[in-house]
Length: 549
Ligand code: 9MR
Ligand code: ZN
Image 1 (cartoon, rainbow, N blue to C red):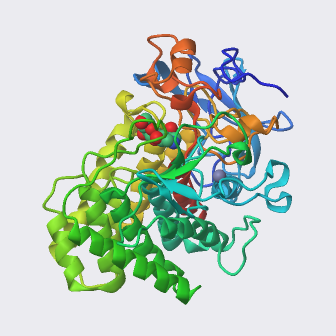
Image 2 (spheres, protein in one colour):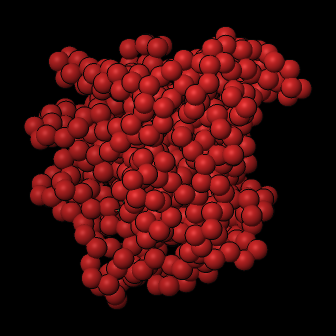
């Protein structure tokens, strides 16, 4: 197959061929199930695969939905709980097939978890684990320090960040932390999961995250500072990773990368202890070294791309949330009071304490504090817990007024909006865990339903999942391998009303409602790239929903 990179003929229809929108992975038997019908009609029917009507009802008008520009009707099929395969019919149109069953999310949970394996750098992917998507060893040559080309370092390993082949510490730390917290909170979901990766001896997800952690350790300098990223000077062309042989560089230390490394290594040290004591010790030492560096460097050392480099910059305005996260994880791990006073001082700065992103990581610090076994300041504990409560209440109110059932304002449809969608679902999962509030589950499910097809384009934003799904992400190997079916389990960035790349500006008509600003096309990096930290919140949410807890 020979595809062109910038080809404006749609690869998949821009709107689902099905006119009624459902979660294409399906629904649990006892869950709320609502199909979205964006046109006028009074009655709906649910058919099984033999074409027999198994359920029917009246649609309910839910109003005009601003982000999608749709007049939305809902078909509530919650009353149908018998396991099976179905589709919804109304007004002469039909939905994609969906399943009702106790295990409907196992496949998508496994695929989104396995996605990290496919993004491994510094090794080859062999056919036994990677199937048709196997490829040769990539990016193994020593890298040069950007600021002193005479120094070379071995920084091989870790995951490719995204559609590009760069590796960035802050982005990686966020993704690894989502996965580690998912394991910590929902271990039973992972214990039964088999990802068919080469390593053995611990739950597969931990082997996978270890692959990234080993790379973090290589990114720490002798003083404890952490290099911000390892990338080539410019983004590679759309070739296989083993064919990207341009010089690799290691870019200067940033205080965000240093704090994030301390945080994620401290978190991991506690989690890997029962499986590998020596590795856990190593992580603790690395975390201590970086946190000591933070003490010696109270000033913000940010990052901007130097002249002559166009790869991602992941610059941040400050490092407040990163430092809080680092001290909070160190306190949770060691119980040492000095870390408690440092985390309390870090809280004097103003930053969001429930944010779970790659830039603002305050929510991860809050989670560390809330979950830790060490003595806690009752007022602070109360404050942090209630911030999650308050945030989930706000999100719930917004989700209830949205035709598609999600807590997203028009402005939230930005670059990587599916991360926003999934971190909102994470807030509901966390609120359920903290307060035992089971009503949160439905809200987490709704955000997943939206990702998997209950959206105004009727598309599943995860490759390899659903009858009508994205298949042409901005992901170098997926384009270069010549295989028609995309590597499965990759979460696309999703709708972005700001039209932030030339392809998006060419194919999306001006005035398109933000929730419909999407094209399943390789050339659109602002609509259809994939990243490790867009996959990781989806894995967290799926672990929650698959854990039965
Ligand atoms: O995910 C990042 C998104 O929030 C920003 O708006 C965008 C533009 O700065 O950059 C995204 O990050 C990219 C990174 O810089 C390099 N690897 C691919 C990432 C996803 O597009
Ligand atoms: Zn690589």
